[in-house]
Length: 199
Image (cartoon, rainbow, N blue to C red; front, side, top):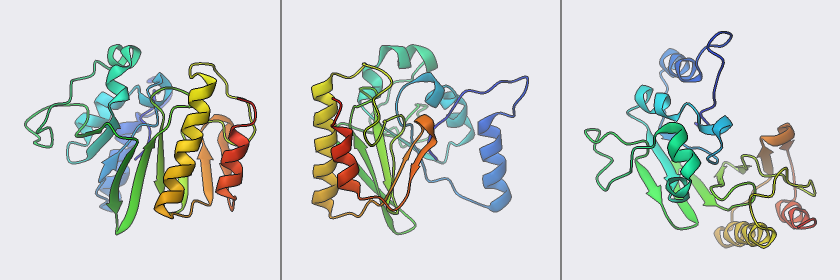
């Protein structure tokens, strides 16, 4: 599962109840949960998802704990060693500090890359040839904010190219939340180069 958004209690069902109903209906075990970054429209309901999915491993990067706004927004409970024990209530079970986290899902590799471009907490989730980029603007689109310094954006794009190249992993789909930018059958490295054009 990726993202835990806000909702309007007067007009919408809660996303955490909808996901729980779906997983219960189909007998699905939710192994991992991720947030793409710390902005409220992606993480507002994290504490509620955490309570609904105690069996799920919530994964994040240490940059989330450095974000003062995020900590105040969702009342982050600090991560502690041994947090995998469900007796310790935390928002996350697995917190990584390196640029790359990896796991597996159904026998397929699953990667998470910390690469700031839209925010300093940006996480890219890579699975089955797809990269979910959160609010990264991909291609030659201009970013919607200036929260990340231009040189750091370039460094992040270079890092992502390096990691994917080193893994020998074929990314052929890119999914960005901003503008519902869904790219299929792409030349990954060409698109990444375009991401550098306007920085």
